[in-house]
Image (cartoon, rainbow, N blue to C red):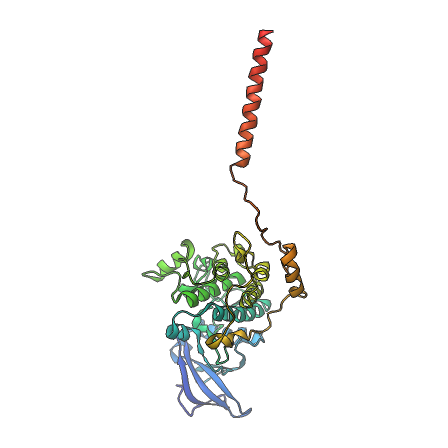
Length: 375
C-alpha cells in the first residue's frame, strides 16, 4: 500500500503529511484515532517488502527501540504489517536532525557540543544497559528538539549483545564515515563502538567537517582503521579536544570506559570542572594537571538550550569527592589525578645507571687484578 495523505494504517493511524524519506522507508505525520495523539509512522518501501533481510531489519528496529524506555530515545508505540506494507509507529519528535543543524550552521560552539554529547551518551548508556548496541550513531540519527534535547532514532541495525547478528560474519554494517575501527575491520560491535561514533559526531560538530575522508567507502574505512584524526581548530578548549580524541582511540580499551563515564565527563566540562571530568575520563587532564578548573565560559544566548542537561547518574558523593580531589589529587570516582609539578624521569635514567655500575665493577676488578699481580 503506497503511503499518501488520508490513508489509514492499522485501522487507526491516518496519514496527514510526509516528514522525510530515508533509505528504507518514508516517515509520515499521522493521527491516532483511538488515543487522539499525533505520532510519526515509518513505512517500509514497497520494493523492500519482498526482501526477507530488509523486512527482518525493519522488525528488529521496532523490537530494539521498544526495549529501552528513556527520554533520550524516541519511543516506539506500535508495529504492523498489512496489504504489502510494514510500519512502525513512533513518538513524533519536534525538531530537526543534527545533520541539518551542522549543514546550516557549520561549526558549533564547544559548550553546545558538550551538551549534545552528554545527552546522547546518557541515552546510549540506557541502551547498553539493555544489552543493545546501536551501531549507527551519526548526526542524521540524532534529533534535536527546539529546547535543545537529544533523541536517538533508527535502531535498524542495532544488535543485541547476546544474539547472533542479522548480517553475515565479516559484513560491515553502519555508515562508513562514523564506523569504529573494529566495525570497519568486520569485528563485533560493542558499547565502545557507539562511543567512537559519538566521538566522530563531536569532532564534526566542533570542526565543521568529518575527521576521515576518502575517494571511496573503502578508503574512508581504511582511514578509520589506520589514520590519526587531524587536529581540531585551535579555539577548541584543550580538555574538550582531549575528551574527543579519547573517544577516537583506535583501541576500544583506550576509550572512555562506558557511555556513562563519557556523559559524566562531558557534563563536568560543560560546568567548567576539568578535574571532575578527568576523574571520569583521565585523558581529559592530559600530561599535566590543568591550571584552572574552568575550561570555557558559561553558555549564553543560542547555546543556552543545551545548558539544561538531563541527569547523567553522577556517582553518589561525586560533588563532595570532586571538591576533596582538589586537595588530595583523587577524583570523585577514585582515580588518581596527575600530580602537579612532578618531573618526568627520563627513559634513559635506568640504562645509564646500569652502565655506570657495570663500568665501576669492571674497572674495580681490573684494578684489583693489577694490585694483586704487583704484590
